[in-house]
Amino acid sequence: MPLTGPLIRRVHWPLMERFKQNRTRVYINDLREAQNLSIEKLRARQSAKLGQLLEHAVHHVPAYTEFAEEWHASGGSEEPSRFLQRLPQLEKSRFRQEADRYVTIGANPAELIANRTGGSTGEPTRFYLDRPTVERYEAARWLGLSWYGIRIGDPSVMIWGSPIELNRQDARRYQLKERWLKNRLMIPAYDLDQSRIDDHVRTIRRFRPVYLYGYASALALLAEIMLQTGRKLGVPLKAVVSTAETLHDHQRKLIAEAFKAPVVNEYGARDGGIIAYQCPASGMHAFSENCYLEVVDPVTGVQLPDGKTGVLLVTDLYNRVMPRLRYQLGDMLALSPKTCTCGMGYPVLQEIDGRVDDMFVSLNGSFVHGHFINHIIRNMESFRTFQLVQHEPWRLTLRLVKDPEHFRADDEEKVLQGIRSALGDVRVQVEYVEHISPTASGKTRYAIRECPLTVSP
Ligand SMILES: [Zn+2]
Image 1 (tube, helix red, strand yellow):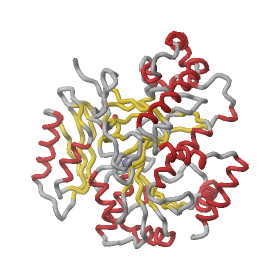
Image 2 (image 1 turned 135 degrees about the vertical axis):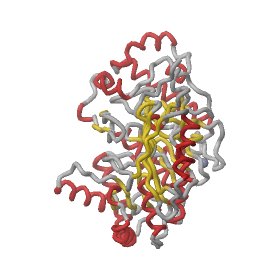
Image 3 (image 1 turned 120 degrees about the horizontal axis):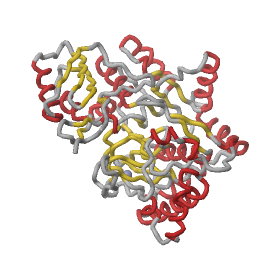
Image 4 (image 1 turned 45 degrees about the vertical axis):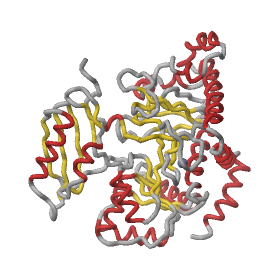
């Protein structure tokens, strides 16, 4: 609907600003101005914000008040980022158990915005945000989209898990709000298969989106079905934005080929906000104005230098109602020591390796990224897709979906050899299945570890 975009930009947003004091557009401008600053300047601003956050946390947040004395003793002479390292890492399990201790004393209940993770990879985590924080996350997303010429109110199609928990009336209201206030059409990720493909392509074509947005696996599946069946979208897209899951190279290729548009990686999480966005020069820029990132060794917890992969800790610089300092989001990645060729000052993430839960542990105790299995299987035509589950370090299940036209019996043995060369002499039960089911939230996981990531000394 060509009118909806301008209406949203010229009427809906100004109304939200006037009557709801929504400041998202102000924050977008702040972030846009900051992107042109030098790395040193950005670092100084980040450090000042971190200092203010620590000052708040040690005085008003029960989980951190025990550090007040040390904070005062340091008398502001210590870099806030160094002081932060004295604080423990915050694991999700601990946060869930003691969540109340992270709420700011005297926080106005009317200002608490409740949120929770989907729980696709474990128990849901419940937490509170304040409105400025939510709006700053939104602003970060709009800034990232603006690098591709996408504006507020532009039509998009979202390939997503459906809001299944809503009753019919709420679902209708939700769809109307999506359609008229966000100019967004939803296609449920669990509903993608060959028999529905024509309906989906027709729906997307009629809506004429400027961009697509969705889970990496769902976008890749849609792309794959379109390529296999020779379907074309016929709608020029400014970008296809992948989010919520690691975007693998083979998925990126499929998506780019099917939709003939730049494939953009958005890195964020419900409980971490919009952390980074890929720029047109391919750099994953972290929004250092909104968050402070650290990468630590998964076993010792010691901070790692740029360029080394480890466990990501996120400290949100703004949320004052429930600060989570050094929060373990569950991802493995490396910060890059390099700057991006696009000229923006925002620091760059070198690579996002995926979930800590997707890391396998080998029999000799080393960690192996879940994608190793990707590299093995993607070079074979025998299998359409797969899933590897590590139940115990020595016991795994490999699920394979055959491509009947190209299947070669000896490829199974090659996959097993590859797994054993990475993980040691493990036992692998092979199951041939029709498809790999996504989890309830619509995400599909290729690599799952069910045992702890512990190393024998
Ligand atoms: Zn860049």
